[in-house]
Amino acid sequence: SCFPKLVRTRFVFSMSSDTTSTTGGGVPVEGQLADVPPPMPDSATLPRQPFRANLEVKNFSAPPPPGTGGGKSREINNSGMFYVDSNFMVQQKRMEDMKNAQPEKAQKLFQTYTQMVVMSAAGDINGILGLMASTGSGAPPAWFAVKMFQTGVLGMNLEVPRFMVKNGFDCRMGPLETILFDLVVANGKDSAAGEGKISKKERLMRDRKFVEAMVFLAVECELNVMSMRKGDYMSLMHLAAKDDLPQMVLCLIELGCDINAVAGDADDSTPLMMAEKGKGGRDGKSAVILRKRGAKSDWREGKRGGG
Image (cartoon, rainbow, N blue to C red; front, side, top):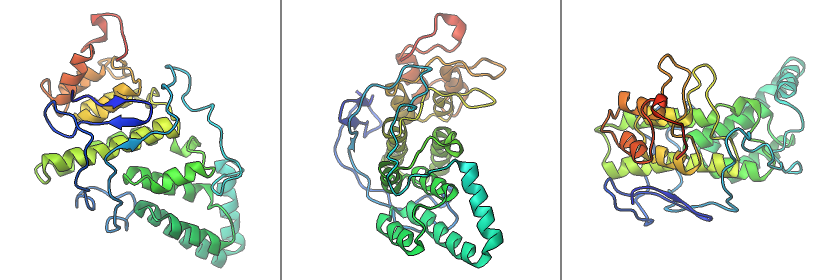
């Protein structure tokens, strides 16, 4: 089957464009496409970590049912080096106070924290720990910690984000509420930028990295994949279907996303409707996958159901 299978300790993906599935290795994709915007201005030239053929998901349990809020029950390691003991706005106020009272010290510290953000794109945990020790200030301020986490996740390098979560970072703080949607949008832009420039196998490998990041956010960070985007009430499934991202669509189905979610646009769009009107069209891979799973092109066709 070309569908991935979420099991207790492993996530299995399709490695080919047909119906053959494999968990074998692959050739690591080096660097980013030239016209894919990097997470940080100077991170495009940094080396990437080799891609792991199989994703190990520790202590996996079934996704929370719709409406439960996802990871609200996850315990935060409040003794970890990335634990933030105050809210984001308090942290921002402290940064402003330091800039006003000690501008030179603040500038030096902020330059160091900016280096940590760049190192996050390269997965350089040891470098980050060395810089943290040199500041004598413990964890970086929340704003920089958030940028480190975003840069790693959206740059498809999870070494630092995973280390941060294990050491007290709360990935559910306010500024990260859109990161699930940002990841799917980044996958779509990466796919569009690579058209005609990379091989089909390279495309699959890059898409798998985005899927790995989604699994990390949903399973390890326990973020709620059932959430809807503010404003248009698009779900993650709507966005993945619109850009014809079959690997992401399969991943979201396995994570429990509603294949018949109704958006808040003028058409009351379902994911299948978005797929048929989007990049892949009616015969695109995402549309085919959704129809096979029983998705409705129009929610009025019948009672809504999940995949």
